[in-house]
Length: 156
Image 1 (cartoon, rainbow, N blue to C red):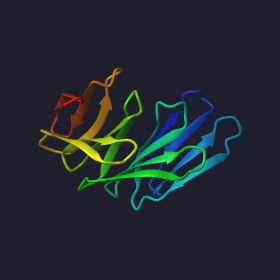
Image 2: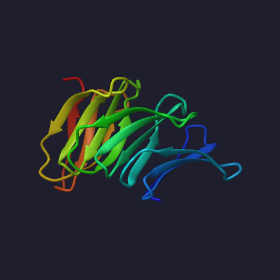
Image 3: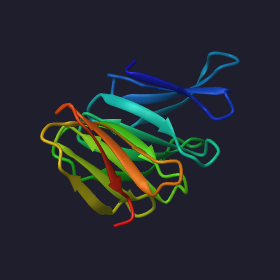
Image 4: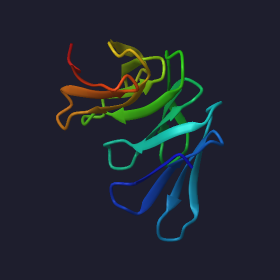
């Protein structure tokens, strides 16, 4: 297991694994509630959307990120444009955009509905290890294996 997070209500845990899946677990029973299958590489991270636990995002070593229904396990959207492993994924506070960070040295902003790449953030000299939105969603913070962190506007 490469990452684990609590759901906003604390009643579920979402894990990401080297077995190419993410899983949703009940914190009460310990039982697996849902398995998210469809990646062809390790799932490096998995997070809940800002919608109250309705969607899950995954980032994978297969170079993609995916948006899933937390209830049905259905893949709602695949984000395909990176040329190396995707290490992290985040939903914007308004849930309209997705942000990914990749070993290809870029972070990307995506339309959460269509899956279209809206913008590629280029400026790090090595792989981007993480990317997150600011609380209001107007800025993006990235960290990199080039020993830097950068703040970007998510609006332009």
